[in-house]
Image (cartoon, rainbow, N blue to C red; front, side, top):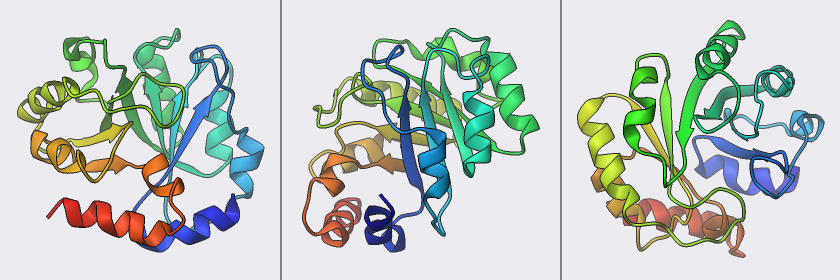
Length: 197
């Protein structure tokens, strides 16, 4: 993983780390101990796709692993306000995420309490899924509500759709298979950035 990070960190602004517990979504991914070993000059943006981010200690573990930003899901089973407060107390930035079927109004009460909203543009779980186009409307509405908020979009980002997400209002783009699925990671990132212009 360290070698993978070295290949992309010069061309990226954040290192997005998907964490899955096998319950919120079927896959199980990295543990905090593995992420802690990764050294990088760019901030670790940790996306907790877990059922209990607060009560099962995920927030504490990833703070210790070097997270700069922790994003929790509205759909998780812990109290959202308490989880947001716990992240703030640990002196990290906080994000809230919603899955494609979840309406935007569900997170409106939290918009003044977070630094970023992560809009899932695929159903969370497995890499390589296709971008769900109706999510663009959700991004547009959120941008109108919060003109200065960071809006991150995650899932199915390609050269063909990244500009659509940008024009809708997203300003942070998570690229998984469209970068790590290519032999030349630098070119893959450069091509994505060129598509934004």
